[in-house]
Length: 151
Image (tube, rainbow, N blue to C red; front, side):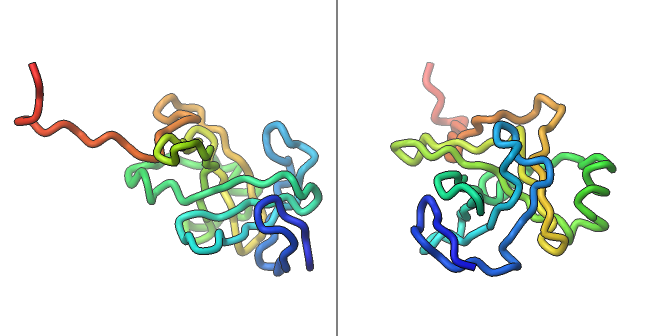
């Protein structure tokens, strides 16, 4: 199926790229069908493109590429609605807010995207914990070495 996209112009989308967000996304409740498209030339990022609104697309990434210890527990209702039986049924993505310079870009760790690529279902899951923020730096500050501290 050919679609018009925000970032790539007209492209061909395969059925296996389609994801249904039955409740939409927060702020976009009428947007239900999306395609997950690889970002050309950059394997760290993908595009979550609305199938009905060409100008609606989000840059997404696997948060573990930037925050290896990122974790939370999915409630049973979400697991059931997305037909998740094991960890293999989960594709985890976070929305990236691109800024200039790129090092100032952020990840929304507070509301990750939970996708079951086999069932082709997804949900933006808002975490009920204060451990994560909607604007986590994509480039984390390097810790100061003990000998490098100034007085």
